[in-house]
Image (cartoon, rainbow, N blue to C red; front, side):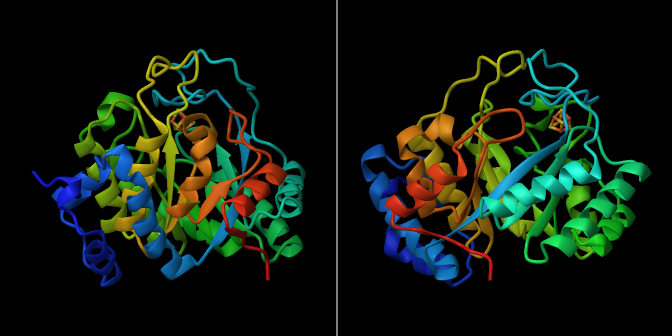
Length: 331
Ligand code: SF4
């Protein structure tokens, strides 16, 4: 077994820069970095992060465009059919409301606006609805990056949305193929991979990551991180479980801030050219250490998540400046 103490971090940085994939045992040692060596791991990861993204931080804003009433049974999700969480429940928001959300994103200085719906996947009406929404947003904010997260998607649906102005589709792998049945039984990991392939085939950029802290093993986390690399995902959100009361995973609390940072370093070192986003559960699980997520991630969310609150845009900007980073502004 390779220990973190055995690693030459300078050599790892050079290996990553050369485009070579880290060996699995090296990746495992990174994930199990002793807490007292975390500053060294973060410094090495920062070098890789700066190669492509400098000190820039992209702000993203989420919009829950349809909340609750989902027929799927994802155990981490407050909107699933098996969740008893106390959340707002509403049908798909109007085009005008979604455009107003884009307005708010632009005002907050977000570069990317991500509209998300609960549900297994979009039907023809949903695709038409979001097509119109994308067109309207594109006219009003040509610089704003539009991302859609609508569930399992066919290639033709993705093509329609691309033509309308969407640039990214998010569909998270969430965890390893092996662990997937532990968190969801109504669709499979392979279904999710197919959506990613459909999205790429339609010429859209892919956004797919996972959730750390659902009870998975280190091997599951390693599988997920390698999957994001091998699928050449453009944008990798790393979420940290927010175990919401009323969900099947409500009793799952096994993360520490240090573990979250080590996981982020792993995803960055395996995906040096991709966007890496410190995503949901950042505030809850990293607390005062959340600023260090920027050593690995080049992007974070502002103003909360789908059904949980988060740091407001102004406070996020302050945190970014305090950590010595700068918000990526629109051209
Ligand atoms: S498909 Fe999406 S909205 Fe539905 S339960 Fe799973 S994560 Fe939640």
